[in-house]
Image 1 (tube, rainbow, N blue to C red):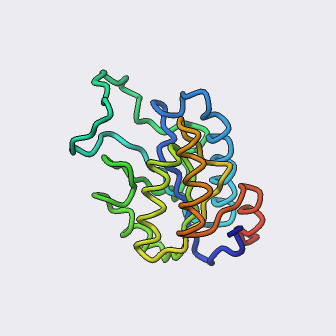
Image 2: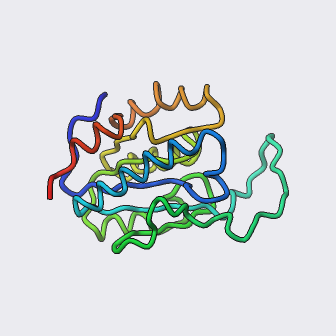
Image 3: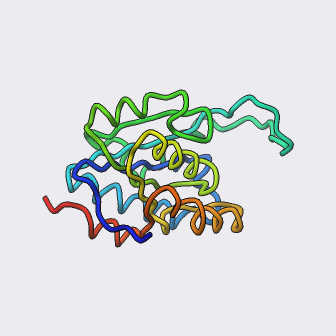
Length: 183
């Protein structure tokens, strides 16, 4: 369903736009679109949550997990998001989703948030996991479809076409910005 409305207390959640992940070739447009949304949310007086990841869930998987030493700034958020802006909320996660094992739900509740708009990388991992958990926590969910990306085009398409419409609404950055309250 196309984005139709934003609740008066909607937060933007930006997933994993950090130096170690935002360097992928497909990432620059995702960073730019997410930064536009972050600026628009701040201008509207709405919360912006910046999420980074510093680890991974410990369970066994079939996929090979490369064991490489990461640069010291790997988890640093990209500067385009203006992490230094007043009122920015932060979450550091160790799994795909931003809710599990973090205080994200408590931060959103304290801010009176009833809806979230989610952007970031990777569509079918961090973004989808965060959006699913937001839905399960009772938040209205919107995904900014041109502000998410994934290295796997088929997984990205599946999330956009099948998963996100089942748990919320979808819309472009421009459509979401048009729904924001005017200051």
